[in-house]
Amino acid sequence: MNILKQNPHAYLWLLKFPPVAVENIKKEAQRAGLEEGRVVFGHTLPKREYLERGALADLFLDTPLVNAHTSATDILWAGVPMVTTGRESMISRVATSLCLAAGRPEMVAINLDEYQSLALQLTGTRKRVPSRLTALKASTLKSKEDSPLFDTRLWVQHLDRSLLMAWDSLVAPGTGSQEYHVVVRPLS
Image 1: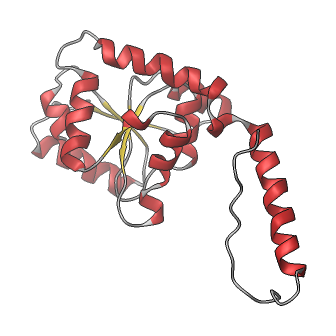
Image 2: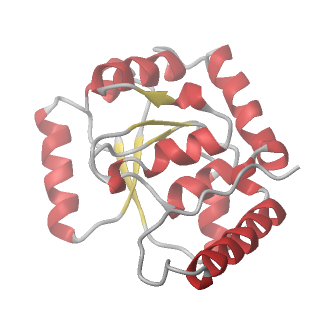
Image 3: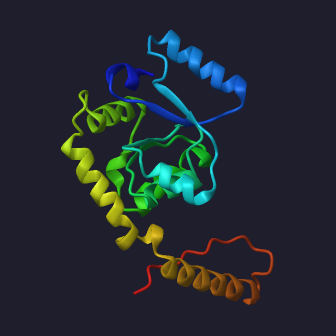
C-alpha cells in the first residue's frame, strides 16, 4: 500500500481471490487512504488470454513470503519486469532464482526496504514512465532469446546429463543407498 500511496497514478492488479480476501484487501486499501478502484481484481482466464493480459502490466511486484512461481515465469516471458526479494524458505526464493536465470539480477532486492525503493524508482511518481523501466522492459523481453531460463534445449541437455550421472552413481560399486548431489557443469 505504501508504493500505491506514493504513486497516485499506479494501480495494484491482483487475481480475484475468495470473497473474504477481496474484502480484506479493499478494507486495507481504504484504511491506507487509497481511492476506491486503485486495487483492481481480475478473474482467472484461459492461458492465452492470461498471458496477453499479463503483458499489459508495467511492473510485476512479487509477494515476499510466497513468491510467484509459474506466474513469475509467465510474466518474464511476456517481457514484464518484476521486483522480488527472497527470504529463508524455498517458496520465498523462487522468483529470485528465476530473475537470476533470466539474467536480471537488478530486479532482486536484498530486503523489503530495497524492494520498496526499487519499485518506486521503476514506477516513478508521475504519469511518465521512467527510462530505467523502459530499458528494463526491453532487456527482460530480450531474456527470452538469450537466457538459460528460457533455453529449453539446454534444460533438456542438463536433465539428460543429470539423469545419466545419477544412474552411474547408483550402479557404481558401494553407492547403493548413499545420498549424493548431482551437479551438472555448464555444457559447451
